[in-house]
Image (cartoon, rainbow, N blue to C red; front, side, top):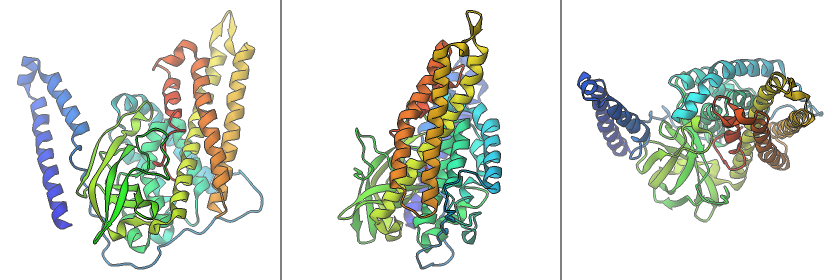
Length: 446
């Protein structure tokens, strides 16, 4: 393993020297006189985006100072109040208010540029990490801020972030999907190796990779294969639309474990055989999505998460789908909040277009459908955090978010008329992002 890390380090050193030389060349005054500055700068940008096709991102060392045994520390189920109550607690209100302000002040203004450049702005995700989003689901015993399961709080946070921008919200929440998976299903050794990094000041980029690029993809039938070896496992396959794949240092990857079915594995980006390439899509462009290539990736026996349990994998898929539904409610609310003042201020034939019955009914339909989506999402989240069965509620939430979310995005574009089709207004981006709700798997995990 030490030799593999050393070889990976040499690759990145050579890559880094090459990019440094290109950067110095791009700043040369001679290029200005020769008219070559722009082509060379484009080359530097392309090398920066595509330079990780051979090796994964430079990874920190995830190791614990001592060996740990046991099943790991789990958060206690939330209290069952007997009644379904949507009223947030005082702590939840404070968290959502803080996250909402961050989304309005940081994510919303940066969203258009991130969508164009296929990457979050420099420093944005560092500032997002300072919010401590990853610490909400980590128990206090492991250095986090949680005292019990916090699925409802996580859903409210996802909703607030997506109100700013869905693509950047995905980039912000991707590391917490990995930390939540470690809290819920990691053993004592896995938690000791990885979780301390998620409660520090320098939270690693990380991602939950379930999706694969094939028609009618079923997360319970991954094409990525895991076979047993004398030292552990070997993974082969390709994962699609992984957020911040080029920067990620740790992945939780789904694979079909021979004789067992789908399972989750911890994969460090510095492991031999791991490589990434850009994989931009119609929406979520600010999340800097990429393809994760796994070619005969050797993993130790301790890389298997949750013991390969089918119940663990099913819960991971459900919590991920619930996360996407929560994101859909946030972006759908952004559409509603944007179109109401627009239709009241936009005039046609001497009066606001909101006076037209068809326009007023369309806005009302958005509000009604949004409330229904949100109710089902929070009900599913409440049952999940109380340790109750929630498969039915998640299925309903996903169905509503898929159908109504896309309809709300489309209605937002229609209500703005020609303005809905241009990038001057954010509604066209929200429409593209909401299309992802019905096809994406993994990435987020409540």
